[in-house]
Image (tube, rainbow, N blue to C red; front, side, top):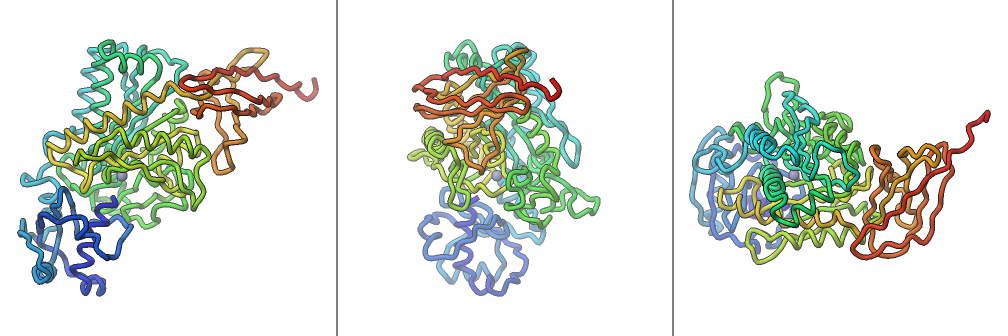
Length: 497
Ligand SMILES: [Zn+2]
């Protein structure tokens, strides 16, 4: 969302008096300014880091679409800006529809409705039942729509003891590229299994989960041309009994419970409203139930826009315990995705640790290396031609993450030494993990842990209540492979024995 903020600076420059008064009259004009270079926008101006759409709607390839009052348009003219008046309307929603959807004022047909995504998944499932399966993970908070994950693996009905990787889209409703990229990932993986050796390898060695749309209700609002600005879910937060009263709803990328209270806003009409309490929203609980069961090694959450990767984390100056490796992977991911201009790649930047977003939560709570990919630049809903390009460019990033399913790192099973049953034990690397993160646990199905690590020597502490703690020193991780270390734990004698 940074570009919108940058572009906003243009308005701050042009309308200082009106902004100072804090009471700008309602904007009824949609203006288009062409050939506005970034330098002109940036030049010596105030910056907002707040997400807002009250004036600048988009800035793509030098073209700015902005809302203005007549007085503001006059100021622009006096300052030498050339523009065309695209539309005049007292109903601002129409101006937004024109600015974001384009001339038809309807969502471009290239984008998938959720119904169409699920139809395509169902068709693939009929054709390739061995490798793709749809899993219901929850219902939406307000309108009780189904939220699906799509599992892809070489033997999808069987729960296998392999690393698991997740891709998700559309925590934010209007950031529809996520749904497009996730749908493309599904098609590519399923249709190219046993044809493309890389794809075959990924499905043989990993279990892949794709949640194309997390915020199904919000996505519906945007896709069905009701309101192109919609970002949050459709929770009736103002309690009026009427839906889609912009900007009500909960920002479900502020509703996870890791440092929830430190991020977002407690104002229900804020675009970043975090909800009344962590996991108040069933969309978040759906992702939590999936993460609890699968304990993802790696994941990407697709957003728009900015052509930037956010990763864990900068926690008021403190870096994540796995900072070195996270930074390496984030940089590798960024450089595997070309920008819309095509001459550069995405950039990696630290995300905040103190916000209830998906990446601090997945990393802090489970140890998942989760990355936000902000796809495209200057808007969230792109023209047909840009949509396809952004999607293809982003597949490069998805494949980069899938390649990391092969390590290097440390893996193994923690079992009861007597019964050989898998245990949900703590696997602690004291030289790496600080108190900023929850202790990493083995996953529930096989008692397996997976830890991505740089080559080197490590020491482990394995512990579980009722068992002897084990300390293992000088475990070597080698380049390009998983080092396997199975650890049986001795049960402690029960009191009274
Ligand atoms: Zn977003």
